[in-house]
Image 1 (tube, rainbow, N blue to C red):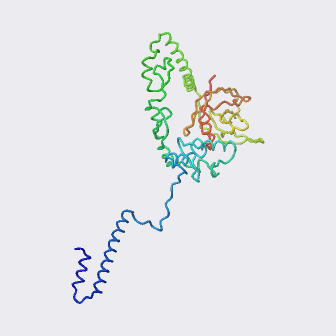
Image 2: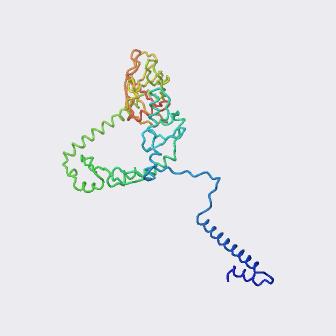
Image 3: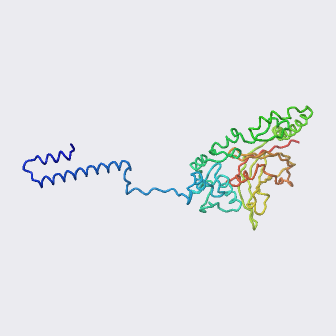
Length: 376
C-alpha cells in the first residue's frame, strides 16, 4: 500500500470526520506526493546537467574559429605563433616587444642591425614601440609551444614534432641524403639512406688500383696542408720574443659628411709599449649598406706612437672571451713607420652576413687582438 493510500485510510478511519474533510485531506496528500516526485525529478536533472552557472562569473572566452571549416588546431596556431616580420614559425629563440608581438631571433637581430646602420631607433613592425636587447625579452612559453607543433620532414614527408625533427633527419629517416663510405677515395655517390647498402655492395671504388688511389690521396693531402698552414703560422708566431694581446672594444660613431656613415673605432690601447687604435667600417663605407643583403666588416690597425725605426709586426683578431661570433683567424703583416702608420682595410674574417648582423646589433663589438713583433 502506498503512502497516499495509507493517508486516505487514516483519514477515513478518523471518527467524526465529514466527507468534505475527507476530500480535502486526500487532495492535499496527492499534491504533496506530486510535489515530492517533481522535486526528485528536478534533483536528478540537476545531477545530470551539472550545477547552474554562477550569474556573477564572467563569460568564458570563445575560441575564434574561421568561417567555413574549423581547421586543425595546428593550422590555427601557425598564424598566432608566427614571427611578425617573416611570417614564419620561429626555429630557435623567440623575442617579444613590450606589447607582446613575437619576432624570431634572426629578424630581431636584423632589425637592430638596420637601425644601427640608419642611425634610428629600432621599432616593432606591428605596434612601432621601441625595441632593443634591454627592452625585449624571450618568450619561453611560445618557444616550447612551437617546438611541439608538427612539421614535415623534407625527406620522407612524414609529420614530426619540431623538437625531434632534427634528430629524425640526421639519424632516423630512411630517406635522408647520405654519402658513400668510400667518399674519401673519390666516390661521388649521394642518395637516400635506404639505398646505401645496395650501392656500397656494388661500388667500384674499393677495387681501384693503387695508382688511382694515390692521385685521390694527393688531392686530399693538398687540402689538408692548406688548412694546416694557418695553424703552423700561428705556432711559429708564438715563438717570437715580443708578443702582446689585449681586449678591444669597437664603438659605433658617425662621420661628419652630409650623408653620415657608420664606422667603428676603439679607444687607444697600449701593446708592446706602443699606442694603437683600431677602426672598422661596414661594406667598405658604401652609401647605403642597409639596402644590401650581403654585409661585411673591414678593419685597419693604426699606430699612434712615434717610432725611431720601422716596426715590423704580424697581427690577427679573434673573438672575445664573452662573445659567440664566429671568426676564422687570418694573419696580417705590416711594417709600421712614421710615414706608414696605418694598414690598409682588411676584411674581418666572419663567416657570413648573419654573423655581421649580430655584431651590428650589439651595443659594442668586443674582440681580442694579438700583435707579434718580428725580430730583425
